[in-house]
Amino acid sequence: SQKIEQNSEALNIQEGKTATLTCNYTNYSPAYLQWYRQDPGRGPVFLLLIRENEKEKRKERLKVTFDTTLKQSLFHITASQPADSATYLCAPDTGRRALTFGSGTRLQVQP
Amino acid sequence: GAGVSQTPSNKVTEKGKYVELRCDPISGHTALYWYRQSLGQGPEFLIYFQGTGAADDSGLPNDRFFAVRPEGSVSTLKIQRTERGDSAVYLCASSPQQLAGASDTQYFGPGTRLTVL
Image (cartoon, rainbow over all chains, first blue to last red):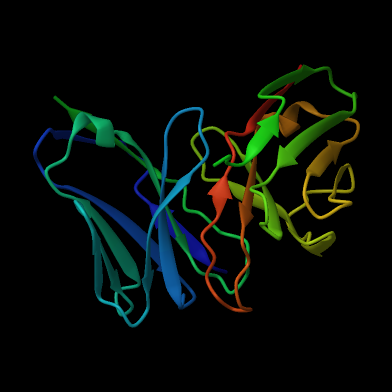
């Protein structure tokens, strides 16, 4: 069955460093993959979408890669700031309109 | 502009009671989704509406859960005979629903936190 894995342990980094979060999927080949940010008490907010024919996508300090051979997406935040602290969710396409999310990785950026 | 709104923000009920959760999507969005999120987990899909009809209800856990969208805008998620295991945050999302097969960004509401005592 389709499986999506994100590191369940929180990632703690110092302000100014690059944060790298991982999303692995197994047993299927998504046509695209989305990343969302979720703050406590709020709903997820869309950040980026990357398609299977795109190796990399950037938006300001955010960069996403998509390796269909490794079945993995990496989400990078450069020059991280305390305001980047949140939970980041990946949602690989499963062929349905509804999103199927990983469990999310909580990022904590220390000042 | 107004985003997706959900009411109530919090709902505490007793086991066995009936609850209704409301979602007001972004105006003009034809697609509406309900998800459920437990602590430490990502949102899990419940049901998806395209207009007034339920296009995919495969995520509803059992027949105690039901949702409607009678006029193609506001939706209500209804839970009968609530159980303690129903406690979670219920999220609603909407999207403009582009071409079939296209990837739609979904816009989420803040959720309703349901606690069943």
